Length: 411
Image 1 (cartoon, rainbow, N blue to C red):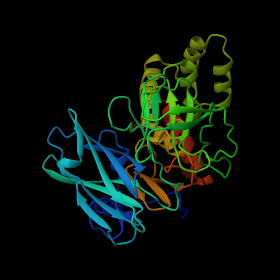
Image 2: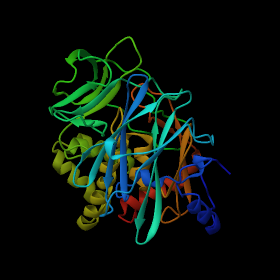
Image 3: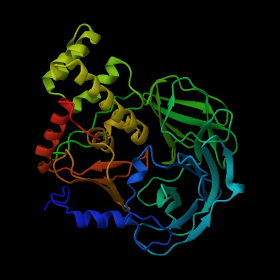
Image 4: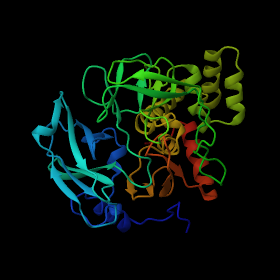
């Protein structure tokens, strides 16, 4: 049986997977814990993080979005070397002193983590009560592993508050600050890349890669630290204190609608996943973009009502993929963003130091399926994963696209 596809998972195994999903502090092997909630934007509590290098320690910022309708449960964290080792280096509970701001249903925390030997990960734990049942959750933060580039002293923050921007994108011309956690106020440098990154190719065969081998710098400029500043050009930025080092932070500058796509030119991009080459060619070459787009949908669906369903559902997935997976390129273009767009959020997610495995239960996918993403070192992000490819995806892939085109895909 191929590693990348689970053809048969009977109900007893599915029950076992569910049982292994209880995220509790002190577990021996965290790679056996289902963390599928991390890609659920409607999870009871959604936690986002940012990390910067302080004085011989990592400074961790958390954003906890409480969607339970009740008080946020206590947050606890562990520091570990990896996912499999039983040894826990540090265990702490977050306190009121570490709460830096409380908004209506969003809490912001800041706390230091000693970078002792092998302090590579912080694991955040909490337990929520849903309909009388206890649901333990876990969120993972990478610190200083040998699979990542060095932690940066820099953080992207709001213009007037010491609260990081937790998305990997900011609106064009909006004031923000680039702040150094430990260095005195001075100037920083930013590389700008006006590059149209390719979308991820389908998972069949061995062609295609998410790694950009040659990326041309369009400009390099200096800007002030800790002062409100706006970035006026859409694209990728990489900010550094020292241009001779490998340490820095990256972010994308997008229009104010992002992560939604609103222009016809932008909307046409993700349609390549569910379209033929001829359809995309007609869409691109139409003299009147709006008319070409209308013709595209009518030719595909033969029905206005069905077209509305597909447009609503498909571009909701694209928006969420941008929210979750934008790094150095738009989220929908990444391997994870592609799978999320076409298949929805995974039922189960299993992580270790080198990879993530996403499992989808059988519904209109016809069979249980799994996708494996291998972690790749990338200077722009510590969350770069390449989708493992296999020819045996082909028949299930096209069946899924057919469901989208007929307006019968359920998520």
